[in-house]
Image (cartoon, rainbow, N blue to C red):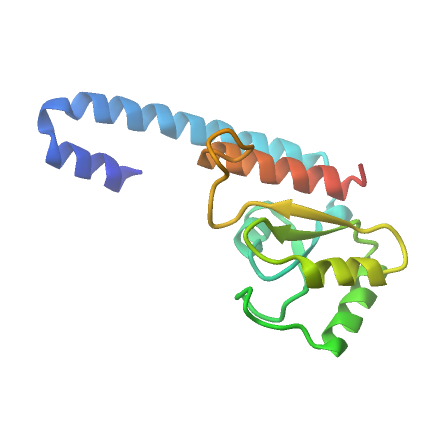
Length: 163
C-alpha cells in the first residue's frame, strides 16, 4: 500500500494529499477487515479450526488465524499435481479422524478429485468453493480484495460450524 501511494505521489506530486488520504482510508478498511476476521474466527471452537483443501492455498491464512491444514487433496502447492490412490485413502482417513465438515477448493481449479474424496468419506462433507489468486466478476461476491476476504472467511466459518 505504501509503495503504491509513494509511486502515485512520485508520478503526480500535485495530488499527494489525495493519495495520502486515500491510502489512509484504505488502511482503515483493512484494519476493520482484520478485526472482523478475528472476531469471526473466535466464534469457532479451537478444535474446529481444521482445514482440508484441494491444495496448499490457505497456508498463510491458517497460520495467521490459528487454523491447522490437516490435509490436501493434491500433494503439492500447484493445482497441476495429481493425487494418487494411496493419498486419497489417507486423506479420507484424516477427514474421518478429525471430523472435518468440508473440503475447501478454489473457483479457478478443478474440484473433481476433491469431490471424489468428499464422496468417499461416508458421511456428508461439503465441497466449499473459495476465491484464491483472482477476484470474482464486478457483480460477484469477491469483486474487491475486502469482499474476497469477507466471502472466503464467511464460507470457511459457516462450513466449519457445520451449517
